Image (tube, rainbow, N blue to C red; front, side, top):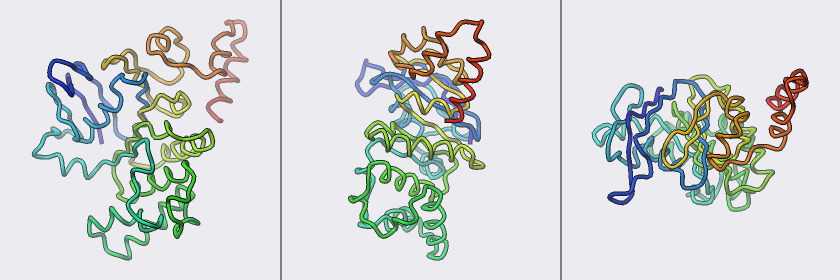
Length: 265
């Protein structure tokens, strides 16, 4: 599914815009990272994509169809979102029942439901926890259950809205590993909205948002080697990237080897 923002402006209060004349396109089957400081408009973009908010100006197209009040339910059924706080996403007393919740609401036949629960719990490595209470899981495990619940609905687009922001380093590593795995799934467009620079490494394209506008866009290596852009967006680079950037042209072979290592981490 292709997503297009055409001169989109939105504000929560009259006279104040959080997103300002924003235009960009996301191609089908890509993984896009949208990064920027707190308050830059990243999460608002996610809500606009899902049709949870309607632009004050401009238009949003999902798969060539205008996202408006008339068609929002149909288009939203093709999309899933994972929010930053996994505790707010649970509605059942077991992992299995929680993954089943959305499927039951869509009246999915029971045999198909059980098949999907097993398949997607296994995909995120939570198949041995199906009978556990979500409250007893770690933050990373909870977020993987939330991801399985979204995957079970088999959407074409999955949005991760600051999905690692409330996790400890172990949980962050678990979700980044899951993101990298999802990138290789066929027919999925993955959008990660984040301030965590590690998530950028696995993206096909990066959008840098600051003050509701696009400050820069490009491949991860283009963004991560542009200290001026990162400084303008108040984004701290990874220490290893700072090291690579500090090496001169005479060390190009070393720089290339470090980049290759970084993308394999």
